[in-house]
Image 1: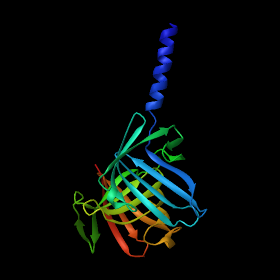
Image 2 (image 1 turned 30 degrees about the vertical axis):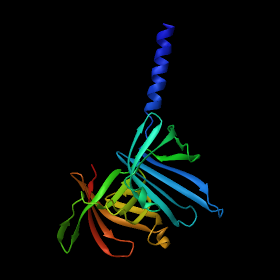
Image 3 (image 1 turned 180 degrees about the horizontal axis):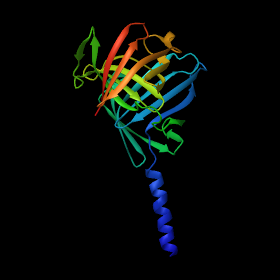
Image 4 (image 1 turned 90 degrees about the vertical axis):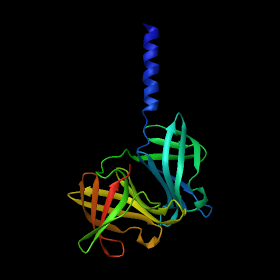
Length: 236
């Protein structure tokens, strides 16, 4: 009986380790050479992830990268789909050791401790989305999401980030991110960093949104005050 009990304990312990999920958002802090506090945010959804760094106090954008990911044993493997600082990395595969618990994650080579921000809840838009069309002057204009030019959004339960890039040319066009809410048909973005204009940090944008058959309709005004109606599809 003692042997059976010990085997059960070992089994439960093993299940507990393998059950840890990366899905959701994580954040960690470090210090630049100039003594500035740097905030790093990583969001994981099924199949894709995004990492961004920006100044914690000012929101000044520093860098972002991301793409596909998988985790085996204690090793994270990523295929880089975009990289604002090092475009030559696009298309490459990198692997590194990661330690994870329910609330903390450590990328061993970085020696930075990341704290879980959320586990994919409560946002109704959690997941990975690709811009698949726009409605202008009442006319729907769809785009082929299989082409190398992409605009992608990765959303955790509380955080969002969009990224515009081209996998063929390896060009990075821009990104922005922060927190979001989905309440009573309103999707609100609270911008914490914006690569094209650092002054947009702190801005909140409110949109009408609806979900139907895996399609996200997104209507309101951009950060420049331009009317927009976007169509987003789930990335598979």
